[in-house]
Length: 480
Image 1 (cartoon, rainbow, N blue to C red):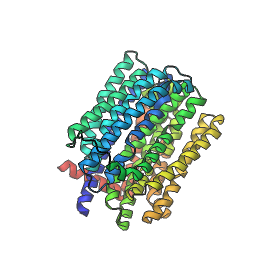
Image 2: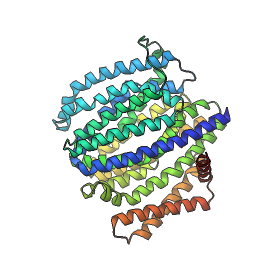
Image 3: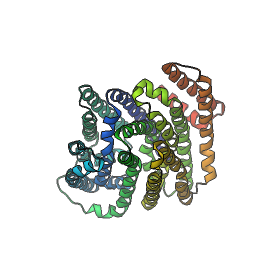
Image 4: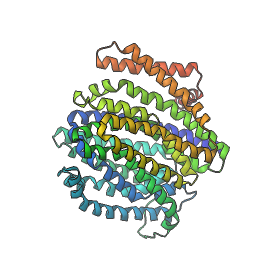
């Protein structure tokens, strides 16, 4: 069983990394094209309603798909009940949001948000049909299939969005991209998943899932608020151009740290659920995932801080220059965001959705207070406070990890600090050695190449086990 789990985890991490890498490369290319075609204000219009779409998506699934993933042996009746519950919830929520659209437009003083909301909110209605099949794919660790589905959806929806933007459809190009992406994802999920819903609607299995799932729902909503509350506050207290610049900075930051988070996310929850009663083994697995996360996250995010200015200028143009300092600040805290994924999945794997819920509720409440207290000091101060708080809040999760699996703060420091210091040192040296280069494209390429070589050399000289294991796995895959 141990060998089988290890093999599944290794393959899952490999395909998770490939999925995340492919996703971010495609998002990078599509984002560059859209960034050149659209203005900060046009991005800002979509940013106004992002939080409503995301929360509605949380409410339709209500955490029941997470329960399915954690069940030892879910039956057809369990999948079917969750499927129909999601459908019923989605249509009910869409009806509510349809009538709420004018109120949203009035709140932000943007009349165009009414018809735009009516269309964009269709994405979570369409998405409700694919929540249960996606839970099936995750439960079975079918990461390879998820990679292919996601890539196809990104390519087709991205090309559609770029084409519409080129034809002058402004923010509607982003709206169509969102809806089409969800639609293609669902088609792909049903292609690979053998399970099919039946017309016999029996919601009784929902009862046994309700307590756990409601805790997960609260957490999902809180995470969504956490990811989008800045857009609401900026949209309310600042203009749409500032919101557009923040949305652009947040997007690139999110793409970068998601490259790491999604690599572990697709295997962490099933793995932790399967070994939740084996404390010593779980501690070893958790620490190894933490080292793997640190090995990737710190160089990726600190590297983004280093090249942010050149990257923005070369890819989407000087009109987005005000997004650079926002991106640099967000990227520092973004280096720590993938660790939230590990802590949260470990807690959920123990069936302690209540811990997950309260940690997130407290985090969001404190963040909102801090943002409201600092918005008058300007956007840069507010973003700096937001980022600093998110780094410090990992300590709250660490106390729970210590209680559940015996993970000490010293062990966390030992696992994270070497990679943090190595990445920080490499970026500092690279920045100093390349600052005399005046051409942006040459500077960007020089910094990426130098930082990559230096970081690899440091890891190799230090004989870091994670690097050796990654290289060995890549060699074995190449031989096959």
